[in-house]
Image (cartoon, rainbow, N blue to C red):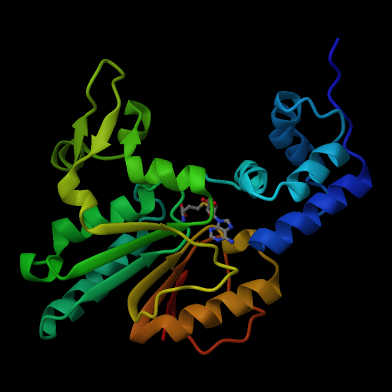
Length: 272
Ligand SMILES: C[S@@+](CC[C@H](N)C(=O)[O-])C[C@H]1O[C@@H](n2cnc3c(N)ncnc32)[C@H](O)[C@@H]1O
């Protein structure tokens, strides 16, 4: 019988150091079972008999392919359409009236940990519904994520019927179409996709874009970072925001205990 390898404390600590240096994510003691659940099948597929042997392989491989796989397996990608709807309501009530009252200009929004795409597609749907066509025409949404697997999924924009059901019938018929074949899946229409540019980006590394952004969504990823990492990140976002621009964070996240220059607007909404 094939027994699943044990995860020794030193191996868990080594994983925690590797994942933190690559992604900023803070795997604290207590997450051992989660780590085992996420990596066990990979070890088996590669016929590695211990975590140490697997980690040696991850680190030795010059193409970094296995490092990417390792990161993909250890990142949490949970997301949904119109998650934390208060941010979308805020756009409708405050931001959209404000930009519509100004003279037409380019609008730039960034979904900075976009996972499988529901967040940027929700932004695009919402702005398509609420912005005038002259402003929509000038709107660009950047959608980035660390994980190449999940980003490929976001770019494909194909969702099962269950996931598509998070949208109203009107939204589904307006912005999605049935995939070809008998899968029952839905696919995001090209008209919606055309507002979004997808790119792989690690929030811990150098960012190629200069901004300025009107709104940055950084939701449900900072929760995995320690306070110093969160502080560095929100200050980097600050530098990239336009004056008056907004940072949206997850409602389970907080900027307390970090030094920053944002004004607090309401829960999970901060302004430059
Ligand atoms: C839980 S999902 C959140 C998705 C979406 N923002 C939401 O709120 O529904 C977290 C995402 O953060 C990404 N992530 C983790 N560390 C990252 C990093 N250092 N740089 C960029 N993305 C990262 C993961 O790949 C994952 O897709």
